[in-house]
Every structure is written in structure tokens, then in C-alpha cells.
Image (cartoon, rainbow, N blue to C red):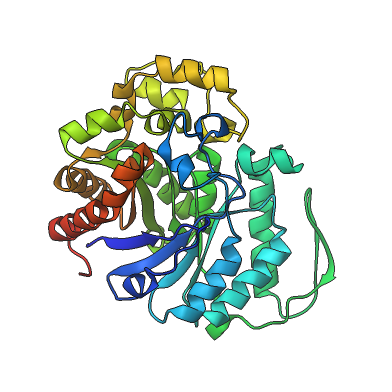
Length: 374
């Protein structure tokens, strides 16, 4: 089975929708939009002292609302599926998610994918949202979504997090079908929920083929236990990579913003590859990041201590042909939809201007190796 390319549309300022015709050309099966208030790039090193990207944008956190942009994309395209990457069920109440998904289903004529996750600290804690029992909340939100979409009369629901009393959502589903849900899952409980509820799996992170296959097997077992066909769940992935020749990679890995990728990786990820994480044995990667944490002093220490070989061990890297081969191995492990995110642009402006060309070359090589739309 061939792989399907997925596009990635940044939702930060300055907003650039110029690639929508390319996304809608038939080359891409879907286009994914992040739903964030803040990014995972530390404030303390987003300064001209550490990166010339700070000269172009005063902040890495200039996010716009993903659902609003999705509506604009729906109105501006006719073929590509439109997806959120991913909405959390802490900041957004499931009733409002249900209504927005139905709305986008109609605007897109059935092309909307509801990408959902349980949330992360950086986008919750600074705004007064609790991270407590996020996975339990996520599961209950899934039940509320299905209840509202399936009901033909007012419904009641009395849960630990959400309560409905004669609640109704009378707007019909587009073509009578629920919007497909793709779940961003990595841990065992979330993977099990993906097996129970998901139409697609949309993980981030640095899992290699063996880890990817193991997690997909967990999803399939959960699907079978729930009486579902495991093959009905599409396995996808955002593949974070560093594209460049050997000398380019050496230069990238001297740059603070690229070295800070290590902060997005967990201590378990480091251990699995034979390294020790400078942030300690309990570091949970993006789950522990906040815009103001770690402090400037701690970040500088991290940049001194991090072993760049650990980053290379976790992140596909090299020429477009080399990274495409890594993606082909993921395809053998079950991957069917892939968005290629080249982080070499975080090394600075001179790298950023070459990133789109290198990403396109990588996509072309993936399609040559495993097939798919050209």
C-alpha cells in the first residue's frame, strides 16, 4: 500500500496561505494546522543573541486560531482534506468542538478531519487550565462528541468533567457521517483510546520503525477488543527531521534553536538510544515545557550539556534521499500518511530559505520509494 503525503500549514503570523493551491493540487491527501497558543521554542533563547530568526519575528508564539483558519482553508480549496493538529479537550469544551466539527464538515463538503489530543502543559497552565487527569477528561470528551453527533433528540450526560441536561445539537452531519477523528497518541492509555475511537492515528515525536510498529500494534489490539476493524484506522505521523548535507548538519547542530530540539525529547527517548538527558531522568519533553521554563540560565546549561548525537539518534537527518529512506522504513512498519517537518530552518535564516526546496525533494523521493500521488 502506498503512502499519502500530508501538508503542514503554519498558523503563526505572518500567516501565509500562498501554498493552498499546491496543497489542493492532488499531491497531498490532507493539510494539517496546529492548534496552539504558544510554541515549544523557549523564550529565553528567542533573542538576536541566540538566533537571527528573532530579527524576523519578535516571538515564536504568534499563533492564530486553528479552527478559524480551517474555515478559510475549506472555502479556498476543493480537494484536500483539512485537519487540526491537534485540538485539546481541556481548552475547548466537547460541545463546542462537536459544533465546530459539524460546521467545518459542511464548509468543506465532508473534507474535515478532527485531530484531537489530551493537551500539553505549555498551552494549558499559563492560562489557568488544569493538566490534572487530562487523559480521563479526553476519554469523556470523546463520549460526549459521539453522543451529540449520534442523537436525534436532546440528551443528558453526567460525567466527572462534563454535564449535559437536555442538550441538543440539531445541525445535521454532512452526508449523515460523523467527522473522522484522528487522535494524537503516544502513551498506553491514549493508544488504547485511539483503538477504541479513532479513524486515524496522528502521533508526533521521534519513534523509529520498531517503536512505531509496537504502538500501532497496541492500537490494533484495542480496536479488536472494542469490536472494531483495526484496518479502518489510518496510521499517520508528523516526521520531524533535519535536512542537509553533512557539513550543513554540523553547522545546524551548533545553533541553539536546533540544539533545543533536545528539550522536546523525553528522558526515556534519550535512554532508549543510550544517552542521558541533561534535564534529568523524569523529563517528559514537550509535556514539561512552558514559554518561561526552563529559565535562561538552565537553558544555557542545557545547550552546553546536550549531546547532539542524541538528537541525531532520535531525529531522521541527512539528505532528502537519506531521510526518505527512513520514512520508507516507517512505511514498512505501517505508516500510511506522512507530513515531513524539516527543522533545519530553525538553524537560522540562511537555512530557512532552503527548507521548502529540501522538503519537496524529500517528498518526491518518498513517493518514488513507496508510491503515492505525484
